[in-house]
Length: 409
Ligand SMILES: [Zn+2]
Image (cartoon, rainbow, N blue to C red; front, top):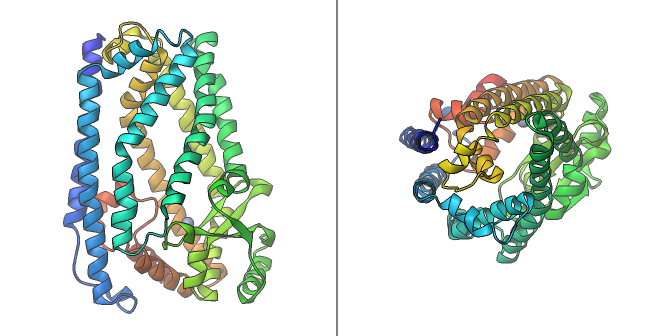
């Protein structure tokens, strides 16, 4: 393929992906309904419900603006060879390919973050604020950003440098070596997420003594889940939205409950939510999820090995010489239709897991308590009650509330 054909392919994939996303957002917005389903009627007051519709509408419309902005920017960069130009600018300062690749992606990451900063700020301090969710103060917003920068510079930088090194030193077989390393890194992140990464951003404390702990102790003993792995997180530092999640593999497994969840739910509802999370563990969702992502990583790296040495790809992005980082960037776009499909399959798998974890909570504890907790969570986060089925199919990692309630009853 010539560089021009590759450029057209890249532009085509970018535009089609953008249009498909926008159509989905649009039909999802059109699917809004004003009636409150009888299942949840007792939980919503009509005023709140109207508010949830407005919240969803405003988020979608804001999404239209940010996506339009970013597609225009991407197309300009592609059409005018902006990426090749950046490579050219960096060349005299960074002779070594590894350092130039780090500088290249570093500049792109910082510039795109700075350009989109007003949008991020608006989303948190205007939209979330308006609907009463936001509790982030400017200081948290700024320190989150800085910590995020440092973390991605260290982790992302190390992985990128290693990838470039292996591509140069090993040749086309690099994908097996890097695949093994990436699989290990994902495993380590999974294992240490709650003990090393999360504490950088949030405070985790063991569940305090009291009625809730006693109730959880009784349940945990029933299903033989170690209790010392349950933590409370100060989610209220950023948002009023509540959540709970399971994380980790083997001895490092932990369940984290947001403080916002605890303050808004009865003891029975909280144990039911916890039972759902234990269900994810008992049904081995974490292990299988990990295996699936490792398979994906290997497949992606193998495809990368087919195009990463092709100089036409660098020329397509406006480069005058072959550059591995230009090829890596082009690859992320060329591969996006495939990752779209694998993402879709992962969402289907994840929705199936949610039903299974719900069933587990129903069988081992109390389906009605879980149903009530799900309703409350849905009301409190103003979540969309009537998402379009196509939108759910492509985007939802959790089944919509009404489907879960139906399955629970
Ligand atoms: Zn779940």
